[in-house]
Amino acid sequence: MEENKEVMSSNFIHSFIDEDISEGGDYYGKKVHTRFPPEPNGYLHIGHAKAVFVNFGTAEKYNGLCNLRMDDTNPTKEDVEYVDAIKEDIKWLGFDWGDRFYFASDYFEKMYDYAIELIKKGLAYVCELNGEQMREYRGDLNTPAKSPYRDRPVEESLDLFERMRNGEFEDGKMTLRAKIDLASGNFNMRDPVLYRINHMHHHRTGDKWCIYPMYDFAHPIEDALEGITHSLCTLEFEAHRPLYDWVVDNISVDSKPRQIEFARLGINNTVMSKRKLRQLVEENYVNGWDDPRMPTICGLRRRGYTPKAIRSFTDQIGVSKVNSVVEYNFLEHCLRDDLNENAKRAMAVLDPVKLVITNYPEGKTEEFEIENHPQNPEMGTRTVTFSRELYIESTDFMEEPFKKYQRLYPGNEVRIKSAYIVKCTGCKKDGNGNVIEVYAEYDPETRGGNTPDGRKVRGTIHWVNAEDCIDAEVRLYDNLFTVSEPDAGEGEFTDYINPESLVVLKGCKLEKCLAEAEKSDRFQFMRQGYFCIDNDSTKENLIFNRSVSLKDSFKKK
Ligand code: ATP
Ligand code: MG
Image (tube, rainbow, N blue to C red; front, side):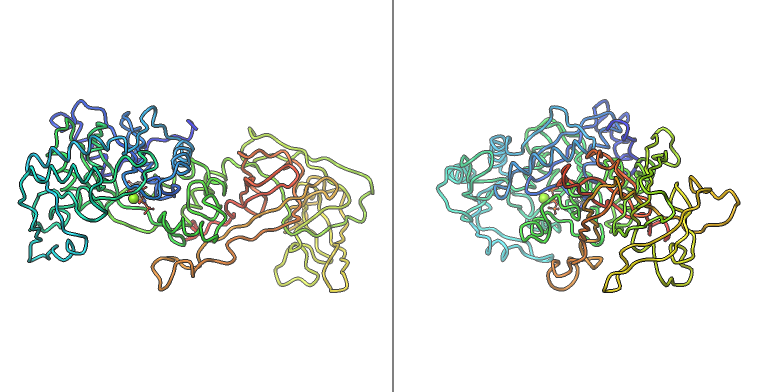
């Protein structure tokens, strides 16, 4: 994957870092150290790829380090399956955390100690308001919040907090709150909750804990303990930054990470929250997290996306402070860019009809050497055989052509790609009027598809030799949703699922070289798009996915 790596384009985060590491800056002489902190409650999606790219890419750019940390402070839903998948996806994208793989839950004991430190300093207290009362006492812009427990003695809070830990109280009975500012204009600073009681099994710590730290308390501690210099996160945390700084400033840690926020990535015609993606999987709208229609990294990988295409996409959309929705087309455009250069060419007939060359000798077979890439001789050539019976696309014949139709119709000449010029002589139909065979005569003088007399042949069609082609299933994909913003409309986002997002074609006829295709191979099937082998494919039952079609609606715009 090394060759895929290009240095990340500069953005506003890098300007901040440049200042921080220059003489007089807060991190002068220090290695830039970032982290990517996914919550292991689902698979990574293309939005995460942006965050992966921002964190790991920035570390790479500054020759620094980036940690991978599972943010598992929330005891619900986390799963080992997700942990493994997240690692696999990040590696596949071409990033490496070295030996710095952590779990936030590993710091639970330390977090507890810091909580005690805050209580002792008079900066935290145990509050007995329940959730409903807490909302009621929250106040508004003109009214400060209130808590009758705010001024309870330190000793009392210490005692209650310990008993919270020991499991003496039921869920929701009390919380530990920071003592900051009940009148703050920033509601995150109105004595935010640091710990809550939650008698729940944790996927790593088991039943050891029944109190769990809140994200806003845990995250800055995790960052500080790991020596993170720059904590790069999405915009929704901007209003939480004062609390992040407050935590780091008030506990005994040596390092003081700086949080910088950037805009989330949104893409149209899809959904991007793990909760919704999980719903699609659990309610069987798709066939698993790696369904090629999913915007997950594993779905995109199965669809045929390359790490290079995804990295190029995340780099080109840029990093800014303004949330925006990127067109799905642009992601596809980035894939085409890569595959146009790197995919081998081949021929595949997706909806076949037989073409019989009536004047071609029976039993004869010819071989043609065809280059695997028109612009790149290094990709070599392959042998394609030609004989009396071929398969062509059924749409490449029309008994009664419409105006400007330049493919096969009685009396018209067409180029059989790289082989010969043939002239259509007619067809045979079944009882229902469906064409079952097309007939043509070839011109032996046109070997290679050239016309020595210079006559013009407009249409060129792809084909395979009926004698040695192979059968395959081909899966075509379209947007998973019929509307641009499925989660912005009325009703459930699942109401907008595109019923034609998956079309399965059986009995497709492929060039025989494709029998040897490897899972990592990428192909351009002439006139059809870019394809790869699907995970379900076997030697006996070949399955190809269309990664993306050829036409680029993005360029046109
Ligand atoms: P989701 O809403 O999809 O569940 P999340 O933010 O809860 O996302 P996390 O596992 O907590 O998911 O995310 C890990 C990191 O990835 C966070 O730093 C988060 O900011 C970032 N991230 C998540 N979604 C996006 C996105 N769409 N664009 C950019 N970064 C994202
Ligand atoms: Mg989250």
